[in-house]
Length: 374
Image 1 (cartoon, rainbow, N blue to C red):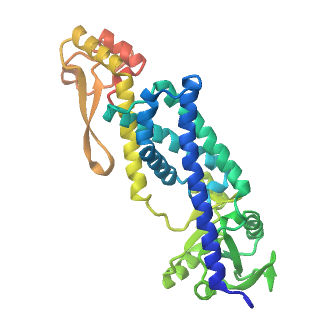
Image 2 (image 1 turned 135 degrees about the vertical axis):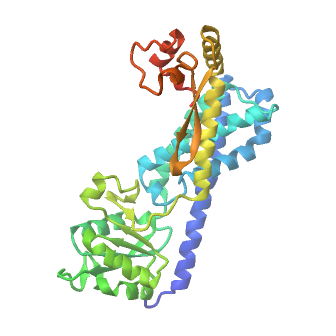
Image 3 (image 1 turned 60 degrees about the vertical axis):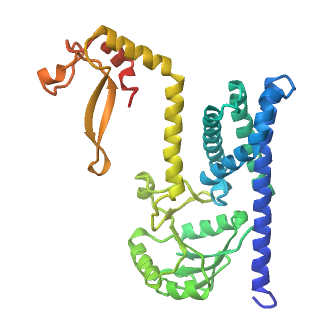
């Protein structure tokens, strides 16, 4: 890089990247709050009633931080993920939905803080629409390169050729192809698709070290990948390694939702999801369960009363089952049979006209309401 200052260039790109990220987060925060304010205005005919709006203002900072964290947790600040329109849609549908569920939970806990139900509904539509529109526009507005990740392409076939073109088109991802590695039998010499051919497969560890490669993408057939994986592991290079999957891998669902342009990619080493994402999944399940429990509580009470009044015995049927890792757990269902029916006849499959099923139980089974406690 004659005449260039690589350190200064890297610092400049880093500064530009973080400046843009700060701008994106700031606009996200403004739009989240704008969605709520617009919802109040639509609900109350252009007015902001202090009775409902003042409590929101007191909690606005916390609500904004929670929603921004959820956008981050669902991949909203992942540069590669946000390069695709449908990923943008999916990410913000999830983040806004769960964020509002958290706000609903806060209204139950904090009595002094409440939103009208219609405001929640309008807010969901407004925040989702505003954020998706903004991020779709941001795809066009973002600087052409927000980073400078050196990429090594393994293989010189048509897949590698197409991948190089896609990386060139997707400049906002910040990838820079520093070279191509060929395998035995491939004839590429000198340059390939405008990129220098810098060695063979067996030289990958040295190339990774000398060129400070941060990302390796493998495009050669699956039977040769183990050799490359072993070579990289020998050097314990702390770099990202992805593979362009072959047809059978796509058919069995081994690829994830990310790629570069229209080129799908899978990681050579599967990592478990981060701890915070597992936590969010658990919290999502709990929040949805509590929401459904509260929403349909009158129905559950009515069913329980009907079961109790029409036949002797407990309201719930309990059964011990075995889950993942051999762990036992107790499953609950609304009781649909006469009490003690299974003890008398043994564990046999229930038939359509099973005399052991009560009248209420028949109705519950028909509409699968007996499974609600699960």
